[in-house]
Length: 610
Image (cartoon, rainbow, N blue to C red; front, side):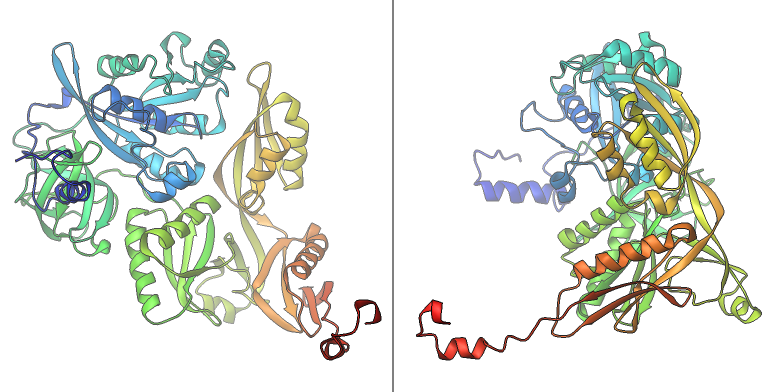
């Protein structure tokens, strides 16, 4: 029985829709996808630089294929998180199934939208691993940017069919011939193969669909009837009253409700409760077949039971493991603690467990702080990633937390046999400069290779900024008459905090930046510690280059003097290096107002007499 919003009150209709989505009962017959063999399936992702129009193109594709109705209100349809809506960015890779009629045949197009920011590269890699084709979206005004190069090489290294698409051709500053020439010089793409569209106006969207169907790759999976059912987990999310729901790519066999499946990793068995596709909301299906992307609901109750990349299989014969992507190593570390211990500690622990399931790129370990108590040390892919994670904890789970200052990792060579025995090795990796006290003999820091694309008029200030951050020029190439590509070697600690903001400032917002880790290199560092009235504040301890430690110590002392509020007593700020004071600043106390009482007693006198 079907209801329309006109026959029900709005609140009742919303409740009906919510119950249908949660599958307490179904308002529609489950879909039958048995006719969609691998040759009728196209799994593709959209990769691009920041703000090149990925989410807008997704909206137009969903409208063109009839998944959603055409409306001016359609904006960021797949960006369902509140943090994505508030910030206007994509954080999570989302999938959507589209059915398209082409030359008297119906094709199943599985779209995977990806983030554009470098902090969410892991989500991009997950989508690439599950796809056979990639739409490389390039802004017709900005041209090829740093993230364009990085995502293109990710896709080609996995053997994906790359379809170049030029977006925003309707803007007056668009220069399609120039950008096509950039694609030819940098990426070796034939200009005749580049599609020109306007995602905002919906121009030439049909060309993308036709190219995907005619020239795109179909999934290379085992579609034989005798193949046992097995699939790989692409993503997972904890749902109230349903447990863990996983997004999967079917690699062989048929997955239907009632089946018993096992995890290759540990052999645990689960029963399938429901299967379906995302279009973009959940739609139940009779079964999932080879090459199809959908969701599977099983009796998985705790988030720790399944991780991204797990392979499930049916029958007694174990399915081979899948060469899936491992979570990357974090580059920024910070501590998270509850404001008050007791019930809030348990709530924050449960929230971290569920959110880390949804975002496997976050590394989480327990730690104890002398002042803040029991908490967790978290590793992130960047400062934006850290801020988004904090916002999701507060908004989605109502967590009340304290986030410590971010820091990067260092490798330290210890001196003395006792210290080596105490820390379990000669070389140890630390995330906090206060962890080791006067037992370091040698330091190493992580270096990255930065790729910067900047217009030629801003080349000089950009190079000046890079050299001030201990950068070393590796190469410099001219892309065309106006753009220059710079490759630099940086210490990670110099670019992770505010380098991107400074780069945008000196280049008036035109430069783009992307980096990749290259390995550990020896570093000449010294430890700066801060004392307030003779007491060491461990949270402010940091490692800085010896060549500039005095200037950094003075800057730290002056900054603390501006931030610390004045009190009724003198606050002495000292910055120490190698147990000697190298910088000092004072926060002067308030002076006692001895005439305050007189003013209250003789308030009847005229103002001039007081």
